[in-house]
Length: 124
Image 1 (cartoon, rainbow, N blue to C red):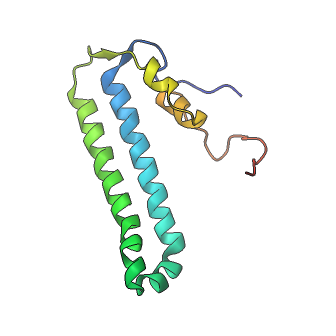
Image 2: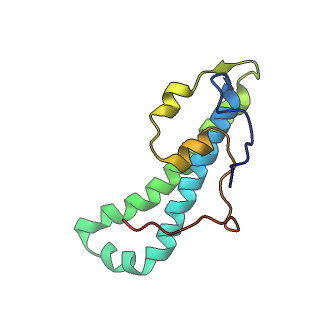
């Protein structure tokens, strides 16, 4: 199945504002993952939180989620504030992104939805 492009961000001449907006969306998605981890792990985290040595590590998960949400908002606001005429060549930066799904999203391709056929599960 071919990916559907949302914007022409994969080109060498991409809109800087749209790229920042895409980065903001990515930060927000990672923040949601961190929040889901807190929910799933909360029973175990409550037990660990009583250990003074582990208490700081338990709090770090909440701080991670808060920081990612703040970065999402910051980058998204920057993206909305730059002129539409600002362009950027993101090719070199994208070549450093080794996670293919992330690289595709940063190029403006629509992420897979849960209803998409994603193929076989890879175990590592």
